[in-house]
Image (cartoon, rainbow, N blue to C red; front, side, top):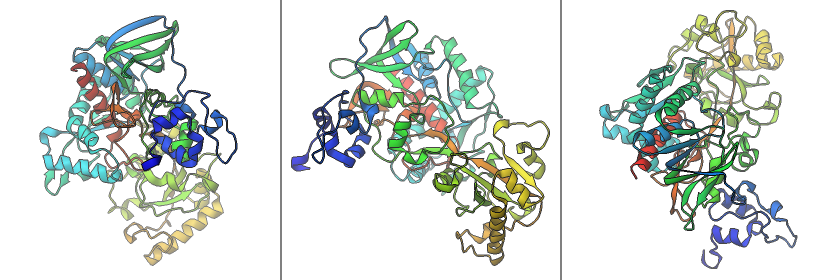
Length: 549
């Protein structure tokens, strides 16, 4: 860059954020360097003066004054921040490997979500197949991930997922080892075989949420010192900049939790921080959130000591496996928006449909993500050649119908929204669409089907099936933000790095607070259970590594 070669660290020290304008805002996505303190003077643009607060596009990067008054100091080998799908395995593994461990959680219990975690069974898989899976994950993430982080998952995930299965079983949890059941499509790569270990927690309403509460019981009984209702607020560093501990708030005041071997951030994502979401993912503004209290605590603390957040478009996860059978969520039935209009070629998988439904006249009560899959009474025979893990019968669909009496099994009753009606007008009323518009959409769709050519959206003829035989069905799905899977930049050992890609001594990140594992606009549901599998694996890997450091 020649004469203009000013580092982000130097720029922030100089208070030159405003001078960068929009390019500065984009550059700050990397949030490297020593954070600017509140009130630092900033350069003006266009001759107009700007206050420091008005010129900082990323206020969460403004480091607070260091906490100085502590009521106590506790010393451990490893301090883990966050009791979820990454933090619990990290803490328990480190303890099992001989370390003294503190686990800090801002809530009064362990918190997680999801249903399944996936790993590769190395003992029964061909090395070429394993590498093909890694390359597949690179491809579906737009070639942005670090391959070494994908390799870390591939080489350690089977053992980690099996460990979680064993621990949850020990605690009396409901877990099914599914093997290849959800990923049969990805078990053979030109003759190179891959087998998987998959932990499915259920049936619903028992999910990974409850499974992690069961795992927490094992952690609590193990000897790990667990501190609930103890939010970590800052990282503690020494004169060299190495992270040596965590400042956390207790009912008695601030306590220093010192870590001889390292601090592991496992705090989850930032979906409940509006400013961070507006900056990194403005397209999720109108979508409801599935989680609460995910405010990017680890992201911020990591940046305040010199780390940086991934400087690429962040990856979001939105889905609805509850309204109707999860196995039928990607079937290319006619899809209509909240008004009853067709809006895409239905071969697009559910994980990307949020991009069609994020704003404008597609909102329902101010919220985005509503759509319906529509089909008729002939769906079982008409769609028999479609790829589907399990096509539910009409009788089985009744389990997902809130207006059909009877006990519901294996579902979360508050979220089931599958409907059946004898007329299109009645079905439209049930899903909240305009009956006139909805009926016209179905009629137009049937015209397209009759020609065998989709002149509206180009859907392949194989998936063009008429909707003309009652009763008619609709799965009224609601996409919400489940997770944001982008975070702090880390190296191949999950150590947080600074703006020069130098590791910050003593600081590590696992799960959704860490970056480099994904890279696409939307989380790819190619391998079911990858998200939790990644969290278990990274947590367990760090726990073992730091304990043996």
